[in-house]
Amino acid sequence: MLLRILSAEFLKIRRKWLWLLVAAGPLGVVALQAVNFGVRYDYLVAGKPAEVVWNSLIGDVALLALPAMLMGLAIVASMTAGIEHQMNAWKLTLALPVSKRQVFAGKFLLTVLLLLVACALLVPLTAGLGSMLGFSGPVPWGHLAAAAFYPFLAAMPFVALQTWLSVTMANQALPLTIGIVGMIVTLFAGIRLPDWVPYKWPQLAGGSDDPLYAVAAGLGLGIVVFAVGLTEFVRKDAR
Amino acid sequence: MSMETILETQDLTKQLGGKKVVDGVNLTIGRGDIYGFLGPNGAGKTTTIRMLLGLAKPTAGTIRLFGKDIRKERIAILRKVGSLVEYPSYYGHLTAVENLEAVRRLLDVPKARIAEVLSIVRLTKDANRAVKGFSLGMKQRLGIATALLGNPELLVLDEPTNGLDPAGIQEIRELIKSLPRTNGVTILISSHLLSEVEQMANRVGIIAKGRLIYEDSIGRLREQAQGRIRLGVSDPEAAWRMLLAHGYPVGWENGVLTATQTDNRVVAGIVARLVQSNFAVYRVEEESASLESIFLTMTGTEGSL
Image (cartoon, rainbow over all chains, first blue to last red; front, side, top):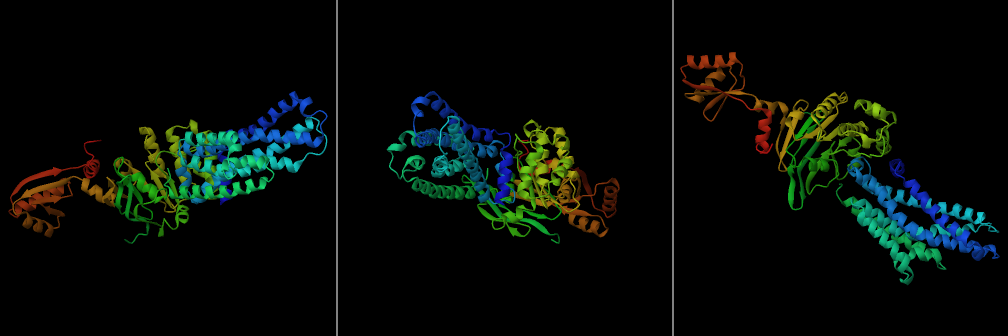
């Protein structure tokens, strides 16, 4: 059933420019790094060993990808929920023989899948940029994939939170504000926060020595927030 | 009741913000009924319907559809129900076909059904246009098509003509009347206008201020609306017995004789018989009430409409 819900969800986002947004995020990040590395090529690349230049490219891509991803998740969650809010379509879906749990799970999974696609795009785009810049040596795929996916997995509590807020509130101003404030907190205060604060996890997952702690914590808390949101959605009367 | 009951509520109550918007409603709908659910705006029709569809939870009372409790078997029940609740729900950026396809994927009915329902609501020509460009009437028709998609046994239409111009109202009414009812589809249609459902409904329930104040066949309601002849006579009880003995269908209330058959020959016969039997006939008057005025009196909204 969940698969059928997802297939309906993917149909509903047609002509909503969501796919464009999903592609624009990683494209924009990599394009900015193309400018960065193009302009400062002599300083950043020339004469350095392959491992060092790949690491600095991946690090710089991850640095820009973090705010793009945090902002993107709030926007994507808001847009996928907004499809239902706009034309009072919640009651249409919820009067069908589908479980409310799965309707909520469908929205969450749609957002997760779209963002996963965005993260996945980072990998070939970054590798391509490296090759274009003439980096020698093999592409460090493992490192690259970790840099692309770990911060997103660690940000799972926020994916769940934004899905919950956007689905529950007809007016998307508040969910979007909370999402943007969250991004700013992570970006500017993240480094000063203690490790247990979830806002720090996406950064930890990107840079610390042991990123898997942050990833595991993110997935764990993500499931908890998802469960709380789900329970509230099921309990509440439909609009 | 010999007929199979497919929808039954008991003491259905919904409290919102301390106010009982639906208050102890007992609805009974039999298979094959076209049930007109009537009441002025704000009487609790939509809230009742939302509870019937599991969109809102009752504060108290029970709902059974097809013999099952909606709280326990919501999904099994909804498999047999198609609905259109209040203003139309649709995805404006999608075409009519895509809107139906999004619902079809959840219902798991064959793709061919989309073309069928589009043709029933006469939207085949506009099937591939984005719905945001549709008129309200077309959107309502799409809503009805969506409701029909899963071959429902019970079709719930909440104010399907709300907001439409007279031509649109006529169109929707014709459409509902023309719905294929060969397999005994039951229809629950709500409206704030009696005139809108009286031509199609066989049973009506009237709700006002959250309470169901009337539920019976449309025929009974019509009987109340029919003109009656009232006869003022001397010794009405004796006169009533005498007339009944002679086979005249008369009633007796508050010291007046009443006859629901109002054609001239019957009235003349009654009067002749009364005179022959030495009853004094003081007055013979016609009392008439339209269905609408009875509805307005019942719902206490006579002044506001």
